[in-house]
Length: 149
Image (cartoon, rainbow, N blue to C red; front, side):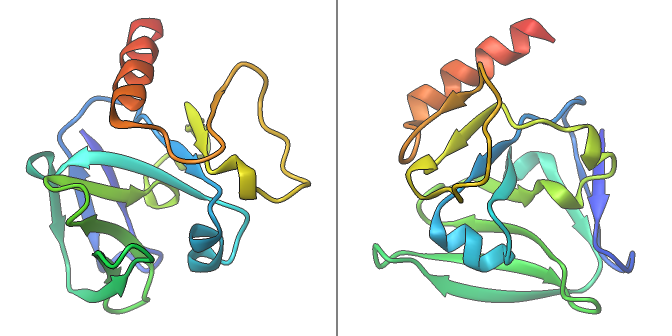
């Protein structure tokens, strides 16, 4: 079981999957703006494996392609915890920095590196994509990672 939550502890979640979580770093300019940082580290999980408790604030966000996603924040401290999108039905995208033990997590791939900050050095040997990785590429990398751990 993997757990995490907000800064104040009012909102907590659990993911019914084994440790370590398989995360990726997105360097797109939208993630940079949303996080106020150089990238967003994300943890995709099936919605059916995700449980949350605590009051949440939901914000629907329009994406450049006209589709929308729903971002969920702790209603007390406003920490963004996770999002869902019509683009990826059945999938919850958790902000990896909200995971308990997040300092021990290394992304297995980096996407949208064409817009990464120039001072960010990507680890040698880590999969990188100038834009998005296709679902098939994600699945292949996840399978390879699981074989190594």
